[in-house]
Length: 184
Length: 181
Image (tube, rainbow over all chains, first blue to last red; front, side, top):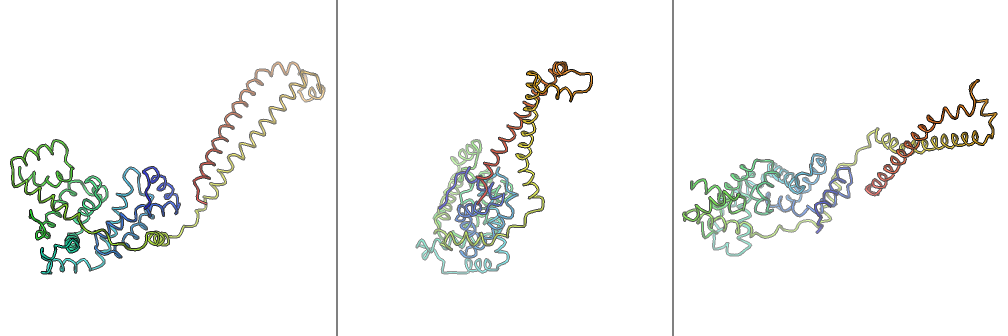
């Protein structure tokens, strides 16, 4: 995995802004995993996630001039990736089918959820069942470990909105996962 | 009070509260079992959410990168003024060198003329160059101060030219290291 220090990354970004494609390729390498992971948590399908991630990087290249170094590059990328993934979902009806699956399937009981895989699947579906706006906040918080300020920056929403969406998302998740939880 | 704390529990759990807010929440939690249960539920939820399997592997990383790079829009043709700008940039050292050559010629020639006057060599030819009624020695004497000023000005110009040339050279070094080959 390519890792870059902050200064090294700023150097790459500066060169990429001037049209240096090799520098941009290094940036893609460094952030590929994170961007694909966010897209995956948002749309639930690996190949769709990779499509969205590729789209995100292409948009990033086109919009590089608009990036200002005062906010972290990763957050800026995550914003583009979130939009790309959610755009894909709006176009594709798959997410609706997923929601029905989670609600209607009586097989998804706590007993069957004993295995980690099954439990993992239930959680994953519950995340995908969240409304998109709340889903992005939850994914960035729980899976990418972004702070509230970073999420606000990435999604260009006020901190208060981050908090309320997160509270709402967690409330929904608790209802979906009630069967798996002790504390309920 | 409880509703307000309840809405802050998530932020408390995430470590996002400032000290004052944190103290308020903790003070409330000490006396409220329901909120303590709430917090425990949040902790458990967090563990449950995080404990999912890793993102399934997709394409090999390099394949992903090369697909992105191939999808980038083609580089556009250079705008017309770019070659002009480049020519202007290269002309800086050219002009400086020319200016330096001119100044050196002027300095050397003045030096030679003054030496000639001093030693008397070629005095008739030089005298012929002067307007009628003037004398060589008189001209040299009256020209002494302006000549000194001129020499000083020329020295300053040469110094400035040297500085400009070295900074151009430095910027050329930096540019040639940064540009991809």
